Length: 114
Length: 113
View 1: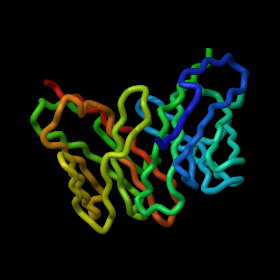
View 2: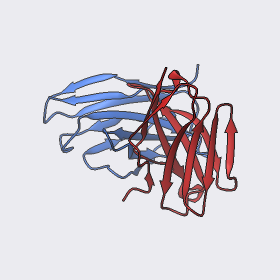
View 3: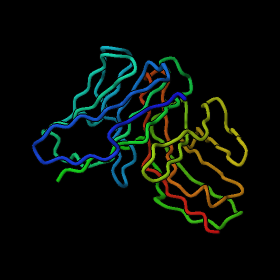
View 4: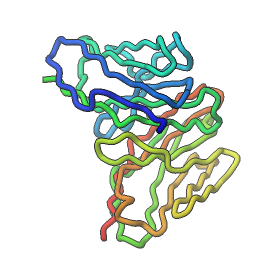
């Protein structure tokens, strides 16, 4: 079945450590996204990528980095510069040319900084 | 500045009755609106959408209404079922803005049996 796979589902990190969240899709979608969910704030866009080897900052990119070396993969690194990294992270994808803009989401990764 | 607002954090409805979830937006460039449903510890899933050229779209028990002049949309669920209990996110996108989708904060719906 086509879909988006995020790993790990739960992750604990000590302060000062970088951590990378994996996101893989087999939907043949061109566009991929990373969102962060915090209580009461909905989903906020961190980074997005329209095509391979290209990505753009979203609304809250500080302290995060991404790469898009392959169409199916869009890993997110939460760096030690991110002041409040504890959150639920969601990866999504969509067709590049899509009037509807419908996003397909993974199941999410919950990061807790100890 | 929140471009998409869901002012009700939660809503409680009796099974069988209508659930109405509201959403307001500020950006007149938005031309496509979507509703997503999210269960705890899962990613959101697409529920229903509407283009700005329409004022209503219906899919089974779910209907979305769009009032462009008021920059307001609503999701109606009739009849409500306990399995509808989830968080509902309103989202908007502009076809001229790539695929940057802006989400509201969500409304948690409780459907009581």
